[in-house]
Length: 157
Image 1 (cartoon, one colour):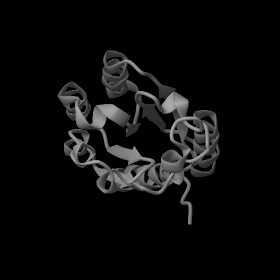
Image 2 (spheres, helix red, strand yellow):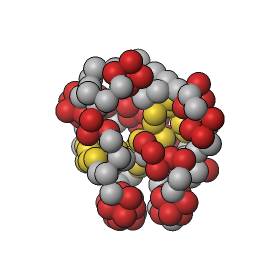
Image 3 (cartoon, rainbow, N blue to C red):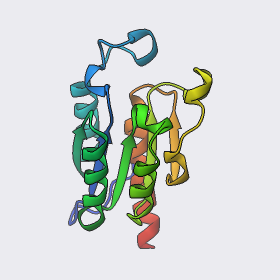
């Protein structure tokens, strides 16, 4: 059941997406499904509305831009949901940026990275993550928003 936050305040959650996610629906649909990134954004907006959240939904293919967005979250967001895509397995710089935010972080992967090639099994980002959701398709984003709402509610208790 979705537990909404109080209406008076809409905490901002950054939903950040890494490289190649702009190709959702076209790239390997047998792994990632047919939903597009626009579909994922709409799902997030609908879920956020039900939960009383505001979201800032972004995607980039550029590692430095993603890191800058993470750093910007320190002063403006209550939490970060991130699908780092290929940077999951390669970016210590992204890990360092996430660790400096002092925010709850939920790592999302559309596919189950542990059932894929061995190089995908390790995530640098997981070290900074409060939780990880993988293998549940684009529904993982909605679940991440629910989990983030719970984290924010518990933080305020």
